[in-house]
Length: 210
Image (cartoon, rainbow, N blue to C red; front, top):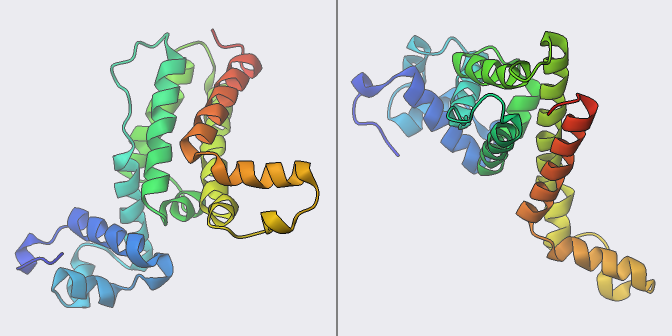
């Protein structure tokens, strides 16, 4: 991926290119120099569009929030369908971009796209009768489920499925053998959908939603 002229540069293009680099090498490997090389410009040229590395991370986060597809066509009263579709999209973004979980977990949501997602999320809960405080609580419960699931999926569960951890053939206890094998066999999306069912049921019960 290269850009033929500096005239094609924009904050959005820089952020998208930086995100692609983090997909390949992680946040630790991202530098303004490497980003400039990828774009075919001197690193100093990037500072016309981003103030510094910290601002670049905000721009990447804005791009990630922009990838979250919000179901705007779902009626207000059908909060469950809207929340399910929104959380599925958020999950897809986190899985698609390995660095996304760290950025969502470590940086404040203050960009334009972040505000779009936050206002939609709070609005869905307020539309069915929750006040601002309870809407914020419900939102955090829902988002925490997705981020926790992805952290486990990309970490320990990925290692287990790749054959890490206990050697199932060396385990004497049949129940433990079954557990280890089940963890390796179960599909990620199956786990997510099961967890999503529990999260939605919990939201309905805890916040007395219709």
